[in-house]
Image 1 (cartoon, rainbow, N blue to C red):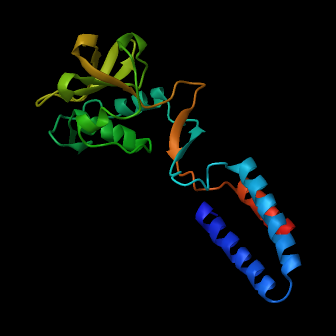
Image 2 (image 1 turned 90 degrees about the vertical axis):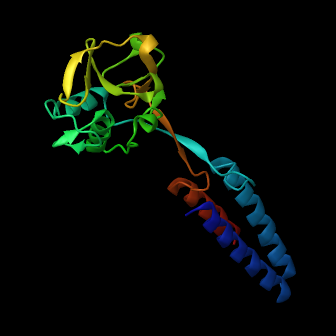
Amino acid sequence: MSAIDAVTRIQEIQQTFAVLQSGGFPQAAATASGSFTGALASALASTQPDAMTAGATSGSMTVSGSVTGQAIVADAKKYLGVPYVFGGTTSAGMDCSGLVQTVLKDLGISSPRLVSGEATLGTAVPSLADAQPGDLIVLKNNEHIVIYAGDGKVIHAPDVGRTVSEVPNWLTDADIETIRRIAPTPGTATAVHSPASALSSSQVTQLLSAIQGSL
């Protein structure tokens, strides 16, 4: 149940109270209304304080990542030897950003098609010294993208006439626009945005208990 659904249900109950009042049971209705209001306020405060707040549109929750950097590297290695084809995204041929998009898609991760979009994925890594297997390394001006394979090597689709290859990393920090980490570091979690208006099942149960206890 969303917060909107909860509000709708609350309004229906309040309308019932109004009918009771007009039917000659004002004291009982007022007592029930007061009990309901207090119980609801308490339930909301203990479940999701900002769910009904005006202007509250988004929040965050923490989730553990299931894709590892090693999984990204392992999948990229499946495409070693695939010829470079500008605009390609399949085992018949791919370019640098096509390789990244295909690997991430294999692992259930949606990725932009161009290097400029892939350069915004995940979280930023400060420098090459901090790079881990599976990180994406983007060259200056978004001209090229490679996958860091660990042990000072990268996997990339180089250029026309060549194939997807694992090679020693030739880049320095001065050559790099950004390094992006897609897979969370082991033992950590990644924060993602979720609608604040959505209530969990336990929150809905508490709200319904408050409603039922007030009737």
